[in-house]
Image (tube, rainbow, N blue to C red; front, side):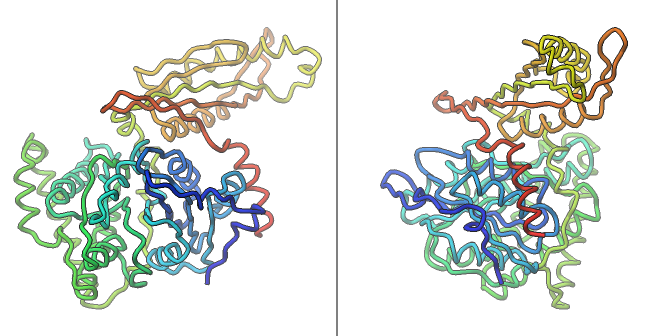
Length: 466
């Protein structure tokens, strides 16, 4: 049973979703969440900032399934400010397929998009994803996931290799996942499906629509960091593919070994680059083979995987932002304001406050500079004001700011002749310039909902829900 609280946290829903036009595709975006407090706010912000001539986001529906953290409170706080955001709660965790069916029941747009709460979309990702729907024969489109894992480690290499093979195979025989868009022509998928994208792909293709892979729709994800998590994830996926093959009479393009081997050979520039890469490739093949044996055994024993055992090492997206930054086509300007706390006399002497805030900023400058990349700039521009120019989109800038806030709070700062220790907090504002390679156009964005406001409202809502 699902609980809808969107109307409880805001009095009316705007008429925005009812506005239609002939020049764009209206989209309902679904985000399925289970204990995603670390990511859900960033994901919603990233989706709301997507724009383009071919698509319009009419609603964002979050289904919180059995959450025991602050996911519900965070989403409810955002819904207070953004009329397109709607929240549905499943008190008991019933599996992702069940959450998707609830989303499909309430989605109003002709095209629906599914995106995970643990991926970072490029600024124009959904525009690229939805543009093909101008062709009435297209029924489903999938984007290109790029992992943020460190490729210089074995597990990072294994994840990059698997997604590279996925990219090459999907370009020949569409195998869609991580972010998908499809026509709103199905009422649901089997609730015991452990591979929701393939179940949807089966239904859409059986209705006679074409499936396409759109590599221009780039989303960043994070693969497992440990062998145990790798096997857990790949085991579930293979068992789910076997079940879909028998249940829905549909086979994923990655089920047969032949095409995979051919693409593995064609990827010699990666797999044969050095003796170490040859060894790592062999190790990756062994791990994948072992995971498939485990998945086959689970399928034969009828072990269910539709309620996922969370792979925790894939959730810390901030740890992989370096790779995202290197591939980003956006720049962000961040203005920090350093505020001093705990000194009452500042109210009587504002000039002293500005002077000492500037001193605190100077003392923190070397610490904060170490958090940036060599191509980024950081400078003091006024009383207690510091400006950073970094290569990152809105989401990357937000992640960087959070790290700086943590550093500032953890760093003791002493100012004045007597070395008085003060507590420093940071306020900030972000302006992002996104450059499109094709036409060299620029889009400018800033946060739609201030993080401080969300946090305050989330705390209030969380108290009411308890």
